[in-house]
Length: 148
Length: 467
Image 1 (cartoon, rainbow over the protein chains, first blue to last red):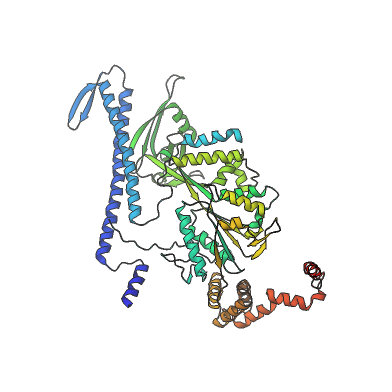
Image 2 (cartoon, rainbow over the protein chains, first blue to last red):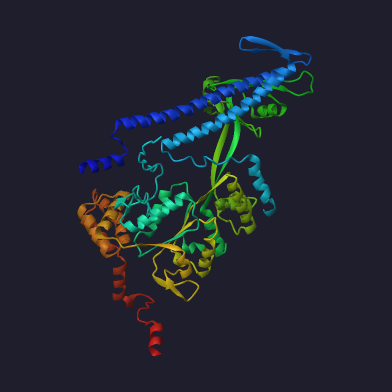
């Protein structure tokens, strides 16, 4: 009888008397948090690469137009290619990185949601809403112009 | 994955604001446990187990937010905790859900019609959540290099190096950006944020690492930390506004001022319809969220028959909040008619309501409430004094004994003691009369009062006796 009362009181206090359970719980939370942090780092790395590509693209375009061949460095090899091809490759990689960064950000949001769920924290308000772009907000004002 | 559910920590109320104690300021919530059973004394609420349990069920319904247009009536004698339950619901909902409290007679105003006042009250209780996103480039300026062409004409060209704690890169500047930077007087060491969509530059401050660059600086210099993470960030801001605020801002050119002055006037229904359509369209696309809240009308017997008919219709719309009404009248005349009806509310509206009744308190519940009020008003009271006060509360009224608490504490402070004793309470009891003693006093000395009316019989009874 007293055991039941004790257990009820312990459960109400938010404490678990079983250490294995607590360790398992902490393990799973740490795993989810690790995913979130890893995703953040990856986004930063992708951003660094994208910026470098952008600088390269600007530099190549600023060259005088008579330079027909550029040297591109891949790992340990230098490849000599026409300027046109270089520009094409750089732009292609740039676009690819943009897509990858967007995907990584989406994944980050999902991981954060999982972490919040596991920690039993209340959901962030408006988390799943799609954002309004600036034009849509201004659309609103234009709609009501005739009535003001 | 099965994670154990830890019981949630009760939200600690921030004690940063010093508030004057009000009649219901000791209420922090409904005081229910996880299975929605009311605890005897919890979160400032005492007793009224059934009514609180019913309120807890309504609370769950409100939190889910899916069912609109429900109405609730809390009926009971004066001083039985009707307003307290409504306050409990408001506190339990938190600051997220719009909660509008008003009294029945607030509807009647010269500035706007009754239906307009009710419509505004309804729309003040519905919140809309939208999210705006913007892409920023935020970083500390390492170096700005602007070259002017050697000939007088021609575009300037420029380069700017921005860095954060993790990365650093060079940006080529166009003509307009160079102008904007020069206008903002951006220097190396400033932390700036550039909005990618509009190109607006905002200076956030100067970096801490550059604090020692100069010995004397202007008065507006603010120091901030170097930003972390990536340079190009996406920020999302969530706004929660009520439909009423959207109406007001969009119905006049200086709309936002009207929100503060309260002089909103009548808002055209076309404006409201446009806004409803837009918000509904966004809701379909997943871009907005409707947060239905609670409208609490106290003394609802003061509304007249037109308002009640309006309420019938308004509750049918899908943008209607949960309506909670409270009244202490029994069978009375509906205002605007000669009909009698329970609580002064027409039967067709009563049919749509869920009704909760509150009962008068028992003696130990009164004692608990007085104890909670003593704590709230910061008054130390001896046990004898508390017992006397409880007896007074049972015989006269709860509100009267609550008011005696602060008064007796003043007397106690005057004689420089720490604790209120029975004598203090007796003194205040003699000085201030409650309702029963005052009416006895009136009857005894009626002839000395001016314009006293107690001698004339009621004309209605005479007439009925004659016929």
